[in-house]
Every structure is written in C-alpha cells, then in structure tokens.
Length: 188
Length: 190
Image (cartoon, rainbow over all chains, first blue to last red; front, side, top):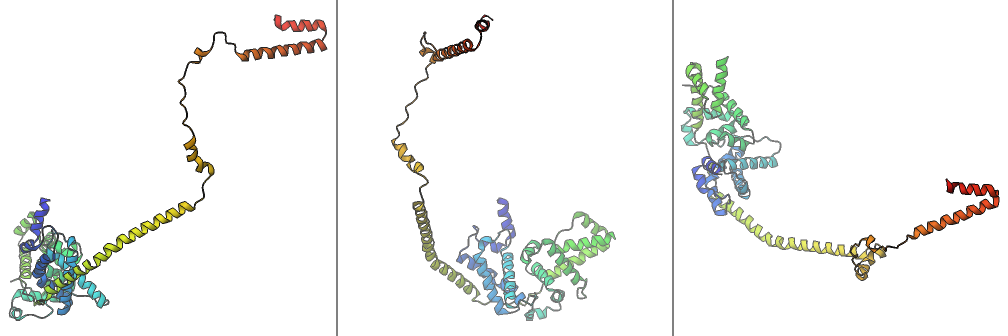
C-alpha cells in the first residue's frame, strides 16, 4: 500500500499531485482545477488529429466530461494527462468514424502552420528534424510526439495508443531509424 | 557481425529510453564504431527533445466554463430524474409483490383437495387421544404359575388319541384279528 502511494507520487507530476484528489473522488470544484491545468495541452493534442480548431475544442470538452463521468476508473499510478490522452484519442476516433467512416484519421504535427517564432527557428537543426517528422507516417508521428513533446513514458504511450509496450518500442525504433537516414539529420 | 548486432542493441536501448546494460556500455567504450553509434543516438534523442514550440492553438477562454456548465447541467438532470426513479422503482416492486401474492392465493384457493383422508388428517389428529404409554416390560416367567399346563400339549394329546382310535377302528374292520393285534403291538413294543 505504501509502495502504491509512493508510486503514485513518483508517477504524477508535482502540479497534478496538488490538484488530484487523494481519495479518488472528485467534485466539480476540484475538476475545474484539472480542466484549467490540462485544457491547453489536451486541446492541442486533439487538434493534431482534427486540424480544425472548433472540432478540437468541442472534442476537448467531450473528453473532459467523459473524464469526469468515469473518474473512478482513473489509475493514479499513471499521469492524469496520459489518461486524458487515452480518452481523447478514443473520442476523436469515434467522432471521426461517425462523420467520415471511410476516411482514415491521420495525425499531423503542427498542421496549423508554424508560428513566427518557429519560422525564426527553422535554421535550428531540431526544427529541421521535426520538419522531417511531419513527413513520416501517422503512427510514427504520433509516437514521437507523445514521447518527446508530451513526455509520456513507453508504458503511458502504450496505454494511450492501445498497443503493447514492445509495439511502441518498435514504432519508436523504426521512426528514429527513418529520421537518422534523412539528410537533414547531420551528425556534426 | 557482432558489432552490427551490438549497434542494433544500442539503438534499441536508446529508442526504448533505457540505460545500456553494463556489458554493452563496456563494449561501447572498447569499440569506436559503437561509441559513435551511441553518440549519434544520443544526439538524435536530444534533438527530438529540443522540439520547437509547436504551432499550438490556445483553447477558447470559455472552454472551462462550458465544461463545468455541462457537468452542472448533467448533475441537475440527474437530480431531477432521481426523485421519479426513487418513487417509480419501489412502487413497481410493491405492485409486483402484491400481484404475486394474489396469484399464489388464487392458485391455492382454486385447487382441488387431494383426498378426504389427507384433508381430515388434522381433524383426526385433533380428536385422537394421545396414545397411552406402554407399561414397563415385566418378565413373562415371573407371571407364569407353577402348575400352568400348556393348552397346546393337551390339544396335541387329544389329536394323537383320536388318530389312534381311528387306526384301531380301521384295523379291526379290515384286518384279521391276530395280525391286527400283532401289528398294533409291534410299534409300541419296538
């Protein structure tokens, strides 16, 4: 039991542990703080799928409502954001299936266009590398974003993507191999 | 061949975000090509982590209030439907139980009596006196008088006497007198 509590604090962010209810019961006031904390990241996560701002906001709202309804299913050993991403991804896929069942949903990095600050950073090798990421297939983009932008662990990515941890490692291995072989990745 | 395998393992551990095992770390220190691979992978990881700020969107300032409004509305709807459910469910249960009781009563009242003996049994049980307890067992030998004669012995003696008379009558009627006397005497003397 003590180990579980220790794991909980080890896995959750410091900000999350301050907001998340320790007893696993959440009321509207507590949940409002969680919405405040995660809405920006979650909205952008969903926007990578929808590439439409209004849809992203609507689905973000749906995701939060579902999270509130099923808060008793949240496992505090994992980060709250990873749990939100899991719900959000399913919500996005269900929404897309209902609207366009024949089209395959793809995941895009920074599809809404770079900000002026990013344009200034284009000379940076990291920016060039992320431009290459945009050219990868959707599963590779998805796993790279979750790993290196959202900072999720392999286990959390596996939960979000509903894959095995080995499957996530293989995706990362292949994606990194593709990036390594691109000319923009200079070793110097 | 071995270096290629070790290079694969270095890349796998780096992609999996795991530390190299000590033996692989030592191999990287010994082999320059493996050391270069390790550096290359570390560089790739660092560049991926140093991602440029995504061209992100700022959610609407009303997103939070919309979420909370939805949650509040759901709670209100739940509270409004709750009293109806609170009254509907017990009423249905009571009505069901009452119907079941009435059905059982109707079935029980409408059935034919299984038989007079069965149906009268309680009345008989009510009027039948309780059986008297048996007397304590007393030794039969103590109740027999000293001069008691078994009536079966007397009966057997009379039967034997009748048979003897019948035999003597038949013998005297159908056999010569000497042989009769002799034959009738033989079993008794023998």
